[in-house]
Image (cartoon, rainbow, N blue to C red):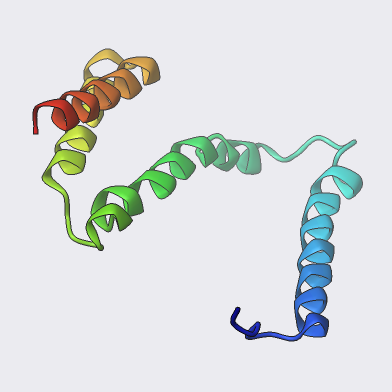
Length: 111
C-alpha cells in the first residue's frame, strides 16, 4: 500500500476551509439577500445561468473525453452537433437529449 501524499492535517484544513467557503457563498445570497427583491439587471443575468452551465459541463466530455485519452471522438462530436441541431430545430431539451442518447447508443452498437 502506498503512503498518502498529504498528511491528515492538510487534508482536514482544506476540507474545513472549502466547507466554510461554500457555506459563505450560499449564506451571502440566501441569508443576507434572501428576503429582498433582486434588482432587475441581476435577474436578467441570472436567467442565463442554466444556459451557461449545461454547455460548460458537456463541452469537456466532447472535446477532451477521458475515454479516448483526450483525443476527439467523432461519435461524441457528431452526437453533440446533432443534439444542438435538434435543440435549435425543436426548441425542446428532451429532443436534444434524446437525439444525443440515440446517436451515442446507435454509434456504440454499430461501431
